[in-house]
Image (cartoon, rainbow, N blue to C red; front, side, top):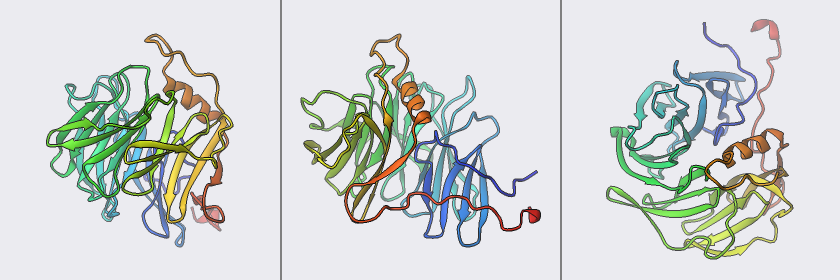
Length: 312
């Protein structure tokens, strides 16, 4: 039995919405990746693998040829990412981490390199391992443990939009730049300096050397060449977490949530900050703020009902 139409969106998937072209948007709904054409009002589907416990992250390659789908593995299984061809919808490669590299059953965020040949995957608890893949060969290039604590969650990893060898990782008290050097990921100097650590929930590259980092307190921080330059005065800074940023030609758009609850204690027995963050996200209502430029950028396009439901 194959689905005809799927309504809704899976909100707890990292980067759960991406445009394939001007008329086609990809998003996670239930246990499927939905490819929706807004002109034809049609949907195509990439179903999750049978034994998975749900999709956790999506990434579309810059050349718009592939989509990577991360899924939470069943108990006792290994974290897995599957790369699909967006034109044929056929599976191109399955990337499964070995236990020596990643102990987690899930990858919480993934990202393609600018040339679409490399792939970053960041595992979840307990080890929060960042893995660089040569995905076409299903080969691990390098592994790095970005978080020094089981309680310090990682929320996003990304490549520099120009330089395939530089990556950024943000999380709970973590804002780090690394360089891919042969078979190693080596930290670069800089980042937040003496600033009091915060929950760095997301970031966006504005250029080759400029990055905007958003916090759980509503701050927007400008980093240049890996160094903190300033906190933007346009940021809400009102205690409402900024959970998403999208860069575009005139600046960037960010999505903010409700005022954050008190932070979880930072000890080994404490509830994971990721759980606190997920609870906050479930309670929030998303509001878009434009930081620069005029008018709001429409970030998502809703699924429209068919005119004649009887045809379904």
